[in-house]
Image 1 (spheres, rainbow, N blue to C red):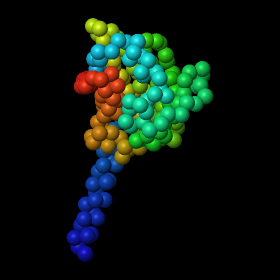
Image 2: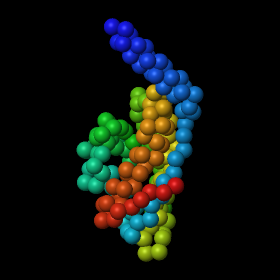
Image 3: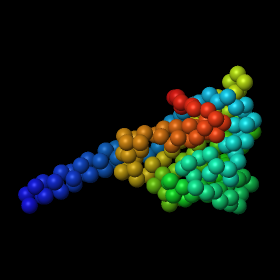
Image 4: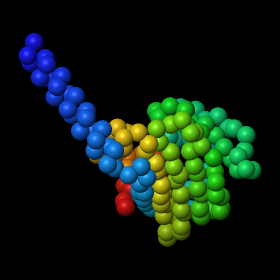
Length: 172
């Protein structure tokens, strides 16, 4: 019985430390990752803006539901590994810049991704800047120390590379 009390006490202490550290971390963060692709900018642009086709090349997205436009810009809901998340395009500058934002207000996180595409030889250099917000202190701890702020960016860029038959390694 004494070992059980000690174990429970240690677990409570660890959780308190995790939450305490989470509260000290900033809600907002910025992360940036880049890859070079052999595909030309127009093809990369077509891939990232055809949200209905995401399930065909992104293993973390099971389905996409196209929604009514938000301020005349495309909006959609992705269903997948992270649950249902609603997005809207907030800036569209073909074929070089796209900014998307999470529009859900009830999630423990939010923010936007800015995609930048530039020519790189016969291919493209694709960079994504995440300006994220993590509201829950436990999720802030996990995002910072367990997953890392670039985990989702890296997964997206590797999937994009695979769509074009390439194996890419995202860099800062």
